[in-house]
Image (cartoon, rainbow, N blue to C red):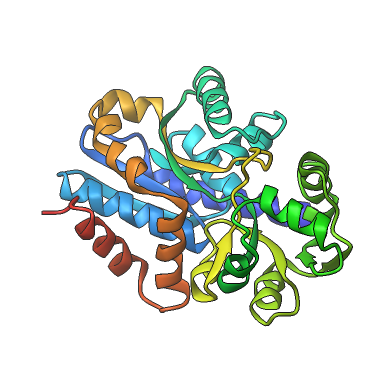
Length: 297
């Protein structure tokens, strides 16, 4: 029943999009997934395109598979995707930690197999990360996972680590991190993903796994530790465009390049904070960001 329901929703969503049809020059449908970061990225892109004389239709709030299929079918013209998602979910490849390498592979494969063009890759990386409270990390002199490994090896009983079940078991998660960096947590506490941030903020643990662009990093004054050996899989964001839309609107790549240049993980985390924590609208936050970065007149 669950599979039937999912398929029905997917079909209904794509049917609703079918009226969009193929874009003409100067007309674009901007898609997006159904979580805060995607709402903001989609709105930034839509507003920026409108300010550059494009007629934009918005089709955000879709599941990952739905918006991807819509792009493949030309029912949306572009949306922000993540290298790790495309690499594993759509192209059946193994995850990669090196962001540029992952980007080049998805860029080449998507163009050849699906007619999808990847524009410039942003530094924005919605990947797994290890976090600490800012004051605790500063007090212990920990800025990177290598620093953490040294500290744990010297003080094995001082650190409790919070993680969700998936990261605890993935070979490119906790087991791989410990193996790559040469240490092992003596005390690991498993919990739901959303609880790791609160446990860290409340002082129940000293280190926790999270995601680099989560707004609670800003809200709780946490720091992310540098993955200095480049082990954790990359999930860099980039605008993906159907080849027909790019052919019809050849200026898109150059026009959208400043967005990729400016969107970092820190910026994304702050944008997500403004929506989720400060409870501002995606449109207000997106327009303010564009204005602050000199992209709107």
